[in-house]
Length: 162
Image (cartoon, rainbow, N blue to C red; front, side, top):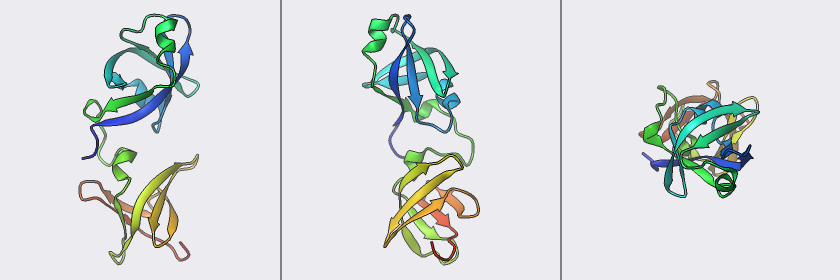
């Protein structure tokens, strides 16, 4: 297992005058961050008292942040979550857990490279695989046959020209 704490977003501004903060979530959906019970800011846990999604951002009230002056101090801070606070459904994973895993050809078992990054595009994510050359692989079942986080590999079905 990778890091216990994962970057989950950034406080980009305040919201109103009562200490709410506007968080840009770094997740598949802002609803994910809305449902987490606490965030860590500069290593300090902050319980989420309330959260709602507004225009793709999470507007949150954090324990101990009661006015705009306290909220302003949090602007531009990265928020982290504790992976133990989150339940993922079978087959789901954190992107941080696939970075660096081996990419192998599903048919031959031959190594292709490692997962270097993930592009978040409107249609679907795209995995950047770096090996002898860099290839881009859409994160769809036609190309991604399986992902085994525990054993550290991703099986890919590549087409000619990839």
